[in-house]
Image (cartoon, rainbow, N blue to C red; front, side, top):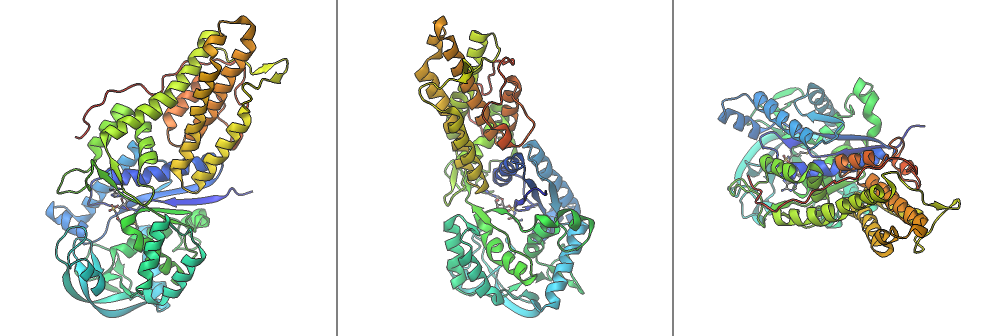
Amino acid sequence: MDRPRKYITTPIYYVNDEPHIGHAYTTTLCDIWARMMRACGEDVFFLTGTDEHGQKVEQSAAARDMSPRELADRNSTAFRSTMDLFELTYDDFIRTTDPEHERQVQAFIEKLLARGDIYVGTFEGWYDEGQEEYHTETSARDLSFASPVSGKPLVRATEENYYFRLSAYQERLEQLLANRPDMVRPAARRNEVLGRLRDGLQDVPISRTNFSWGIPMPGDPNHVIYVWIDALFNYATALGLGEEHSERWDARHEYWPATYHIIGKEILWFHAVIWPAILLALELPVPHCVYAHSFWISEGQKMSKSLGNFIDLNTIRAYIDRYSIGALRYFLATQGPLGATDADFVTAKFHDVYTSDLVNTVGNSTSRVTAMIGKYFDGALPSEESNGSRMVIDSLDWPARCEKAVAEAIAEMEQFNLDRSIEASMSLIREVDLFINTTEPFKLAKDPERRDELAAILYQCLEALRIASLLLACVLPQKTAEFSAAIGAPTEGTLQELAAWGGLSPGSPVTKVALFPRVELAAMSS
Ligand code: MSP
C-alpha cells in the first residue's frame, strides 16, 4: 500500500539578500516537521529554494558589475550551503532560473490566457520600487504614499500590462475560507485575510516591461512575468504539475496539494489569496494550509539593514559553535514567533533556555540515569521485572504515560504545533526527574534487599528517556542519535513502533552520556 503523502514548502528566498536567521527559522520549522512525519512512516516531500528573477536582482547585479545570472548562481549556492550547514533535509532545492521551472510557468500562463483569466489592460497605480509591488489608492493612502518596507515614496506609474482576473474569484475565495477554517493559520492571520477580502478584490498586473530579467511572457517577449507570479508557481513546477506525464510529474505530482506552505506573515496575501485564486483558475486543488508565522526581532528591535542588527550567518555560526546546532534548532522551535506575535532573539534568553531545558533537563536526566546504571549495575541494563512481571512503583504506569506523550507529540506536530509537540516530550523528561527524586534510587542502592526495585526504577527511567528522545529526534537529531547509540536503542522501524514500551533489552551495555555541557554566557553578535 502507498504510504500517505505530505508536501511541505518554505518560501523561496530572494537571491539579492544574504541568508539570515529569518530564513533559517522558516526552513528549520519545516525540517523539524518533515523529520517527524518521515519517522512516522509518511512519504514527505520537503521543498525549499531561491527566487531569482526581478528588477532588484537585475539592479544589484549591475551594481556589482555582474550579470544577473552570475549573482543568482553565487547567492543561490550560498543559500544552499547555509541549509546544508543546518542539516536541513529538503528533498529538492528549486531555483526559478531552472529551465524546467521557466518552461512550466510559461505553460501555466498560456493556459490562463486561453481561459481568459489573463488579459491585456492598462494600469495606473502606486508602485513600490523596492518591493516591486503596486498599491491600490486606498492602501497607498493608508501607507501615507511611502513604502512600508523601505520608507521611500511610492511612485505613480502607468503600464500596459497583462492582468490576472483576481476579481472573478472573490466569492469562491470567501467560500473556501469559510468552509475551511484551517486553510489560513494562525487564526489572527485568517481574520486579516477575511478583512481584506471584504474590501473587494482587484485584478492584478502580472507582467512588467521596465526590465528584462525574468521569464518572458509567452508570445510577447517585451513583457516579463511578474516575479511574484513566477515565484508562486515554484510550488507546482517542483512537482511537474505544468508538464503532465513528464518524468518529474510522474514521480511527484501526487504530492499535490501542499499539506503546508510555511511562510512569514509579510507574504500572506500572495499565498492566501493570489495563489489559491490562480489554482482555482487552473482547476488545481488548493493547499490544505498556509501557515504564516510572525517575525524574529533582534534584542528588542526590528532587524534591518540600516540598523545592521540582522542575526546573520556569522552570528548564527557562533551560536552553533558555542551551544550546538541542536540548541539553535531547539531555541528556534520553542521560543520562535510561531503564533501571531513577534519573538525577540536575545542572547541572555537563548542562554537561559539552553541551560534550563537542554543542560538541566535533557542533559541532566540522561546523564544521571546512565551514570547510575554504570555505577550500580556495571553498565549493564537491569530488568524491570521481578518474579516474571513488571514492577509498578509509586503506582506510576510508565507504558501508559509514555504512550500518551507519543500520541500527543505526534498529533501536535501533525497540526504544526511544534512548540506543543516538543513540550509533550519535555514534560515526560521532567517526569523522569521527578520520579528519581521521589523514589531516590541512590538511597535504594545501599539496601541489597531492594535491588529489584532499584533495577526496575532505572530500567523505567531509561526506557522513558529513550522514548522522549525518539520524539525529540526531529529537533535534536545529533544529540538523540548519540544518546540512542550509548544506550543500545533499536533504530529500525517507524516512530510508533520504536516508541512502544520495552524497546531496551535487559543486559545490554549502557554508557554514560554528557549531551549538553554547561556553557558560560558571553556576547554573541558578530
Ligand atoms: N521571494 C519571496 C518569497 C516568494 S515565495 C513564493 C521572499 N523572499 S525573502 O527572501 O524575503 O524571504 C522571506 C521569508 O523569510 C519570510 O516569509 C520568512 O519565511 C523568512 N523571514 C525573513 N525575515 C524574517 C524574520 N525576521 N523572522 C522570521 N522569518 C523571516 O519574500
